[in-house]
Length: 161
Image 1: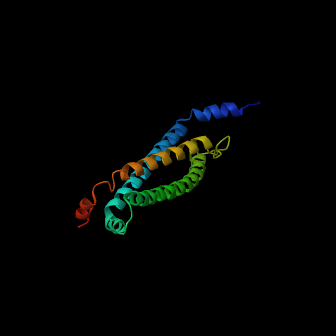
Image 2: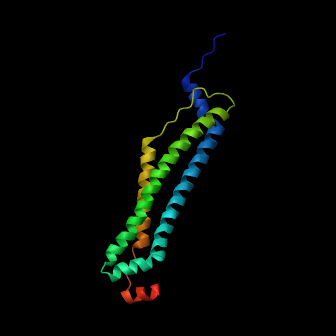
Image 3: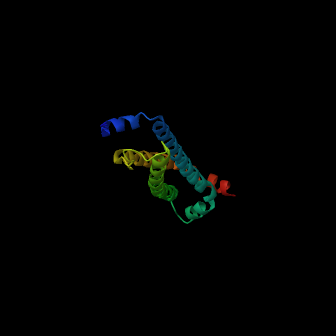
């Protein structure tokens, strides 16, 4: 008896697989959670710099640094942390995607996947996520530092003491 399986039918069957949908949903939730945690970390880093480094920043101001320069220093620190986080997140994401692809291929139906699973990274989705992360990180850093060093200098001296 001749049996015909088309790749189109196999792909359609795989797309309807509830395990595949659950896996995609779990990965999407994990990615959004990671993005929110990264942005919260950047915000806390900038606010921590403003609080913990105020003595150093006061010394720089006493030596003639303008409030604009001081805000720029804190913003640059925050953006460097955001850039390092983006690079580390991209490398970790690629490594985890490869591992998850292998794991799902072995455990989804307790047999080898037909057709074989292939890691397919959608460049447009990745670029969109990078742009979203970068825009949100820049906005958070700018908002967190927008009012820094705006009050008169005597108020800042009292805050340091």
